[in-house]
Length: 224
Image 1 (cartoon, rainbow, N blue to C red):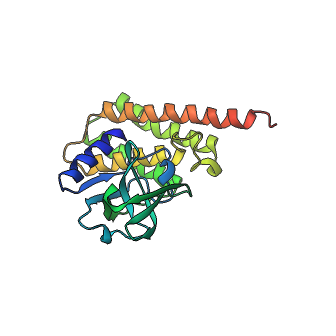
Image 2: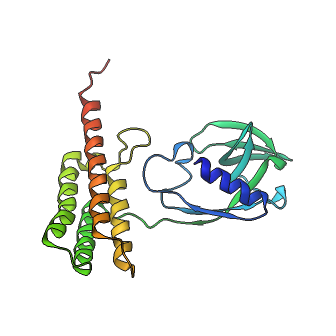
């Protein structure tokens, strides 16, 4: 996040727009009600503070740093800055607002978990055939899908979209990340090696195992 803020600040101070895509997974913290995972946004420099409107996402100088929050209200040259979940930061002058979001591209909507599992398996089979996988490589790659199906049942559909802890990924976030990656690889002229997809898939399976344990631990804790 700090790197993005620095890059955004440099671009805006130079009079350039800055475009980024919100990464997959975890919690979007105080802006989770305004921004989506996988959404692409463009922050543009402010030419005239009068172009700022209530509801805009803005990049603001706040105390000793910078924040990307919302404008809730405008009174003359004063702008009330808030986050997306109800916290009020306070009033700032128009000169403290360096940029506002001028363009947004919606993320590709994630299918249901069963559909994603089928899409991931189909993409892995295509990659294995194209990259001439050995029997061992083929079985290791497809075993990731078997593991994911197993954890889908263990986690349960009521928890597929639930974060086990703040900034931990939900089950469907892990699965959508892997599915998008595999689908992009199928469409690519030069996908990565099979080892990459095997290792990356197993990495996410391991994180799902940890998060399933967090769910179980939380439910086993005695209530006060």
